Image 1: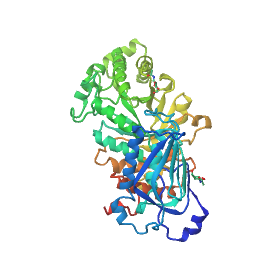
Image 2: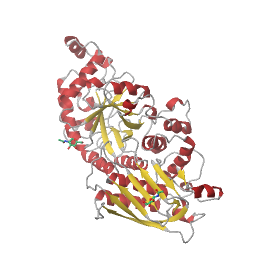
Image 3: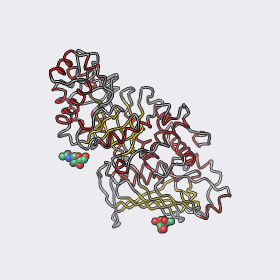
Image 4: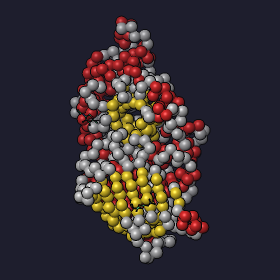
Length: 524
Ligand SMILES: *[C@@H]1O[C@H](CO)[C@@H](O)[C@H](O)[C@H]1NC(C)=O
Ligand SMILES: *[C@@H]1O[C@H](CO)[C@@H](O)[C@H](O)[C@H]1NC(C)=O
């Protein structure tokens, strides 16, 4: 943050606190003039030629953010009643904000190529201007605006000029609805918390060995028999579509995942696609040709429900004894000269590439463990690997031909991230914050990094404690993925993150506190 000369000179005076957007914008300059923010701030949107733009993406966003500002950290009636040092009576008020969208659309595409950039300026006279290429840039700008309004419904540091864009196009949060079922309304709540930190990919690990809550009109038996309880702990096709649309309205892509060939519960509803005579009843049988026909049909239905360009199919941690313990699979391997379980996995992915993916029009993503399986060579061109164990695997995966998303240092359920041998939340978020995704990569390898993802595996987390365990740390990862590479000061980040946690608390998110401070939510 660049401070003006005036603010340096006034630094010794007890100025009211000013607030900054989280994650820190690419460029953020501030002054020292205090303004009021109207509790009923209004928005208007026009094209570059000053023609009025109206679409539901924008009108919904205007509604959400005027409410967030009016009821939020600084502007609620309760907050106003507690103000200690309001701006002078004569201070200007931010009461309306003018927005220019240069490429307006009712249904802008949302992908790694979406332009999320925006400019936001607040003048000393209370003027507020936003410019962006897309509606999604506007939504980020409104989120930032809602962060600027602090205590006493004021902005203390006008003029403010923000020129912002993300460092990485893929900034994900993974949720796991297989170990604990997450109700639809709670997934929407998670999406709200993602938008608050400008995360833009919800990676939805829908099913796993424990349950298969994912509804399907073609194969309803999968959820009927695979959910913990049906239909209460399952997602209907309508639910799935509703979540996709809720997320889209907030600039968030939903990338679904059904893990194959292991980590599944396909066998509960469709035993015929699994290995029936081995030690693992839920592993798909790579030697059964119907498996590929089935996956293609199932995923064709899902491709329509989830319009995102990415499809995630898991692929890691296959227990090869699932294959070798099965007499029929073992015999098939002998007959087809496939020497071991690793080679059989190669065969599986080659069949997925040849028979399942064609026609889906999706870019494939898989988990990429330290053993390098699935091998990038067996996947369709352009696939990406989610590097979930050692960050040092990134160059190997890239050199073998896949793009990468980094998640290994950002497992939110882990207690020893990035070498910090401790349980303290403080050290954990700091450890996560200090990860640099480009470490160990050459300049040309860096071009293959799509971004990163925080993963909230749900063995030990459900809707009751999700916020406390996930949200603060995911916010730390969000700044790492959005802010410039030079933003590395942990102490500076801590003060701003405490503000952000307070803001989230004021919005009803049970984000965990990280250090001692006062938040209005403590007295409301
Ligand atoms: C801030 O933005 C305003 C309005 O867009 C512009 O007039 C002003 O020159 C900008 N100031 C700085 C320091 O960039
Ligand atoms: C394929 O996917 C892309 C990006 O998701 C989309 O723009 C395009 O329309 C799709 N093509 C077909 C034939 O569905």
